[in-house]
Image 1 (cartoon, rainbow, N blue to C red):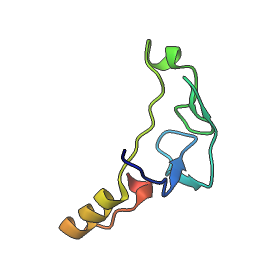
Image 2: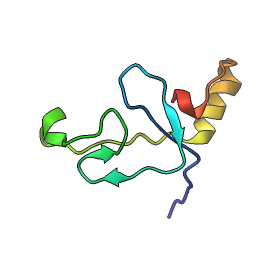
Image 3: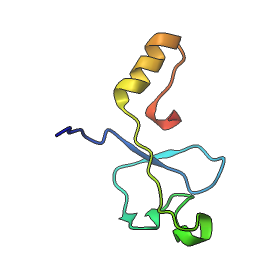
Amino acid sequence: MWQGKVHSIYITPTAGAPTQPVEQVHAVPSMGLQGDRHFGPSEKKRPGGGRDITLVALEDIQAIVEETGIQFTPADA
């Protein structure tokens, strides 16, 4: 079985605002991450869907930086 660890968590309370790192966050089933701009009942935003969380491998971010030279951090993902 594959295992990993959470390197960082970023949320933003409003659209267009930069993401902010948090030490911990409360994940609420069918609502999302508390404090994030997408938090709320899934029926209002996407009928029949749950709330998504995007996971990006730290190795992939590092590969982008190495391959392109573009400075890219987990906050940018």
